[in-house]
Length: 263
Picture 1 (cartoon, one colour):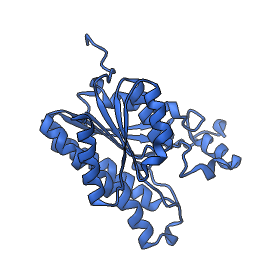
Picture 2: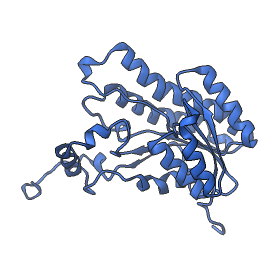
Picture 3: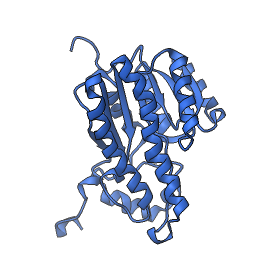
């Protein structure tokens, strides 16, 4: 390649769920690579400091309200995002939620909350922005999954179901829209500390247990996702679609001790 294929200068990227955590890390990485941003939260005021941070780095950031469980909110957000810049090149479908309970305690409403947000919401945001990308003949959609897209964990039944669905949805959309120049991939983080799971990381015994199962012997750090999201958003990945990229330190290998020397 005669140019920097990872350069996102002149590109516009949406990052949903950018009021905290991994959403902000994705936004920082894309802005550092040259992209201007549309960032979303149910309450845009929660992103005031993040907008200032991105703008201090020389990029633009437009904060918009988005509730993934509200069809009209998705429609309004999509129209406002496209109007803000006149185009959208990249969508990072990050917003989501979790309910952490033993399977026998999961309620009907728990299930609907997680699946309606993580799976249905991901689809309809992708559809709303994908329609614009198909018309333009260009787009990069990155659905954020999880190591639970490929592995099951006790206490996370609705979440695992939703993230497994995101992986399958990604392949379907890739097949639908590839002919229109739109790639669709799934970025699946492993165990990263977030607001949703921070209580686990306050337990040193649990952290030691987790590290023992990860071949790289540590949980993920925020910067571990930067290169992957930029790669999937950039021209460097133009012939990659329908794939799930696990950034998990190797925990999805199974991390089972097979010899006594490992114990």
